Length: 148
Image 1 (tube, rainbow, N blue to C red):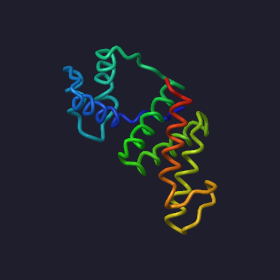
Image 2: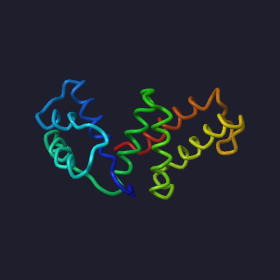
Image 3: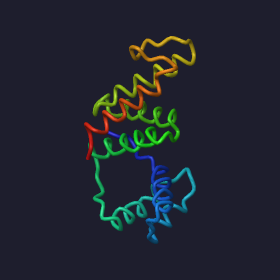
Image 4: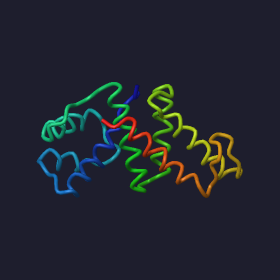
């Protein structure tokens, strides 16, 4: 399970919604928060935006999968690849390597090791030249398997 939800993600999400032309008063409010966002200040606006968009507020396993999907989608869009891979690494630790996230845990370690020592003992066949492609393939495979 996710130990605590990162409400900073919801600010980014609200901004993305506005950029796509999806706007409600609650989305504007959510997008106006500065980071780091505090749960007690922002949670009611997140719930209100979900209600505005007719999205069920989920908890537990579904929220873990949704968070992983979010980070993988950003990786596929080439947005903050290493930071999002780090978030998947942390998420994998939080959920005891469940939900097929161990691959991303290992890719994070492999990439770091390749940069530090030039060697990789975590993901067979990964090099600095191909690790980005491997990450993309694995992200697509995971999304296909865990599609909501």
